[in-house]
Length: 113
Length: 114
Image (cartoon, rainbow over all chains, first blue to last red; front, top):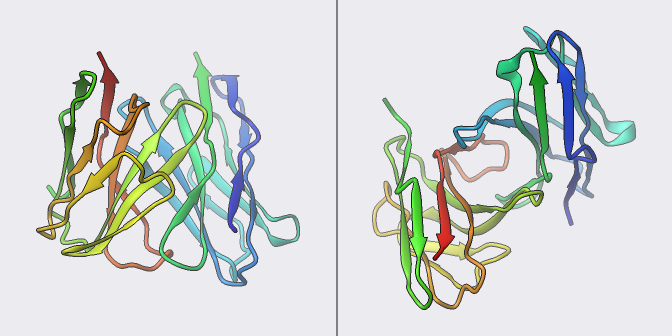
């Protein structure tokens, strides 16, 4: 069975602070894919990143960075110098076996001016 | 512009009534999905379809029905058997069937019970 845990239900920061969203996953498959999606107040989930289980390189895209560690089954997401527009619900998801994704429960990030 | 269109944005259901949520995509995607989102519970899969005229139950299919008569369309009917239908419903699609393919989402339908 696949499982994704996002232990942080809500995070509130002040603009320009760095913030890290945690994601821990469970799977017995050796080949799997991890995703992060952003859900702004408009409701539509937007794809941010995909990582496969064979690629543990960290990735940086502008103010966003992702840290994938197989040893701890974690795929954490850091926003540097947060902005009010980063306020959203962020979902981590796991794809392993079959064609379904397993989503975490999401983390509501609020960035205050 | 290519994308997924969900309608209506807000929907109200009376007791004992069936309602249908529309989902249309012009991305030429093979696979389509319906998710239910409740506060604090993330996304749960209701039904999915990998090809026209075929669909499978997800984790919470009871009280819901779907059809896939056209590649572009995957409507979801919330039947009167669904006793707690109030939720945000998201439709998604992707090009292939593999789990490595990213999902594209619609903007959702908020269903409430009168």
